[in-house]
Length: 350
Image (cartoon, rainbow, N blue to C red; front, side, top):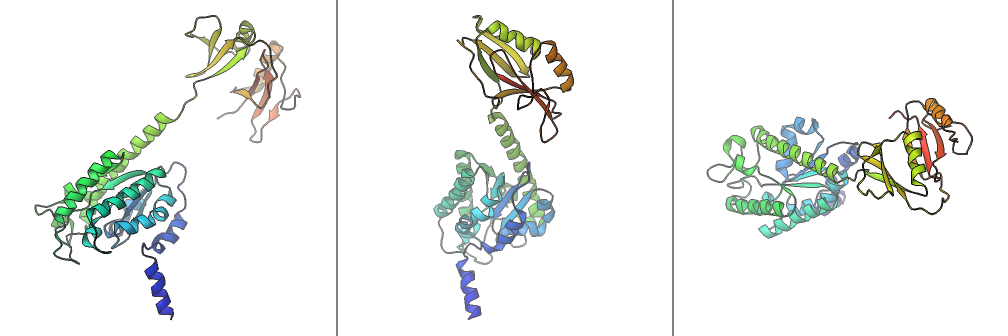
């Protein structure tokens, strides 16, 4: 009875979720700034780490290959073994076992559907997808006579075209490892399907170049897409009085502005960050201290002396004439400009 029960449980775990479940929990989420990469695949991927663990251990690379697996099994475990690990990049190498019929007859269209499903899942979770070419194989030792070579060529063409059309990357192992029969070069394998260490070294060089390129492009894209602070605007009653305050009290330099209508003055807050002072307000309205501009100075006592020279009233959050201490030890004072806008000045040393 116990033997039958164990067999039943194993048979029900068709995608073999149990294989990496504990290791996934041990690894946990990536550290801040970690460039985590997951390699999803079959025995070719699983054997990679067995032949050269240094390649994975010396980077934030996680091997999630399972021997014998086909693409539908990978789809079922993709959330657990890829998405939940939150990598920046996933390399997907799948298809040869489908052609071999490891889990039943499979058409190329079925493989393509599963590859596109994994791609969609990854992209929906902001994971960059690298679709890898299937390695060349003239024959399968465990299922001889299937003549997979031409099917692999056809599938690889589809993978390449799909990657280009769907904002993914295509990693071509095939061209560097194929022989004149469209099989795997004998120098790279002992059985014509699975790479040896020399074969994996070829794959490592190609994979590393691809990962470096992908991460560089991805980081550049994220930087270029992230909004950067440009300016903040205050709407004032007396433009001349307000500008004098910010130039004399806050020591902000005036910069050129394009309107030239006497209603706008631009002041420089920081490199590429400006304060736009615009006239037209009909009355001064109350402002909440929670909404304020914040500046930092090297010496808060020296700046307080500067405020005293201009008879500017300052205080802590409660309105008492003293420095407020933030929990991290930074000193803060608060005061208002001529239109009642609140300003914080602190001595943060970031």
